[in-house]
Amino acid sequence: MDIVTDVGLMHKTAKAIRHDDKRIGCVPTMGYLHQGHLSLVRKARELSQVVVVSLFVNPTQFGPQEDYDTYPRDLPRDIQLLEETGCDILFQPTAEQMFPPGHSTVVEVRGLTDVLCGASRPEHFQGVTTVVTMLFDIIRPHLAVFGQKDAQQAIVIRRMVTDLHQDIEIVVAPTVREPDGLAMSSRNEYLSPRERLEAPVLYRALQWVRARVEAGERRGDALIEGMRRLIETASSGQIDYIAVVDTTWLRPLEELSGEVLIALAVKFGRARLIDNIILNIGNHGAPGSPEAPSTDAQ
Ligand code: AMP
Image (cartoon, rainbow, N blue to C red):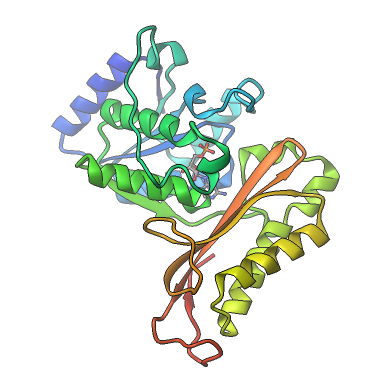
């Protein structure tokens, strides 16, 4: 695996790969890799000839009170995992190179970014879309793989790619979980032993929704209230939001139909955990009808 730390060199490398007519697949990450990240690398491997993983803890997507300084980092381990998984190039620029003095340009996706996670993290998605656009311009990928775990991020990036006519295929890969259902996350590191025991309640709440919907429940409010009760009873987690929304505009759904995103964010101590599922509900399935919704593969 080559490690490229210079923006100019990455530009040149990408140009040469494209000149050879090879397909570049990229996986943007902030490092401290786990099996969730590695599943995206494998997906990129399947779909392209040259896999570029970027590792950049992007300061602009953290709020002033957030965990940029303490975000977990372990470069030697990340390098080893990427070597084992089949990454061709690790692109690892410095913040100084990406955001030199005078950097003034941002990419903003409006509307989709001030709800759900954007409501409590106002600058977050602008930081993500700006840096992802910069990475796309530097790495010049044919496709980029993102995780379903960050469902809103994937939806925002798809919107951005469509709106800006960026010629890049966006692939979204399923959430990888611990055996007890907790979605893998670099921030799980922050959990105390007790919080770690409680944290799978997020997944249980999502599974409860899946079962209620399969039994015919279609009322968004009832599902949100049920999840709230379940989480508050079974854990010390502080709920940031629980949302039942459509997957295009992230608008709240009173009555579930079509493709529905059930998403939540809950704080356990200093770890803010997010999780979600997407359910596909047939338009003709009346509440209580035997026609079960087809659900995602998680
Ligand atoms: P991060 O390093 O947290 O910025 O995540 C980099 C990429 O990995 C994003 O596209 C995430 O959605 C994805 N990702 C993080 N955790 C998981 C997981 N448990 N399963 C699948 N993808 C994940």
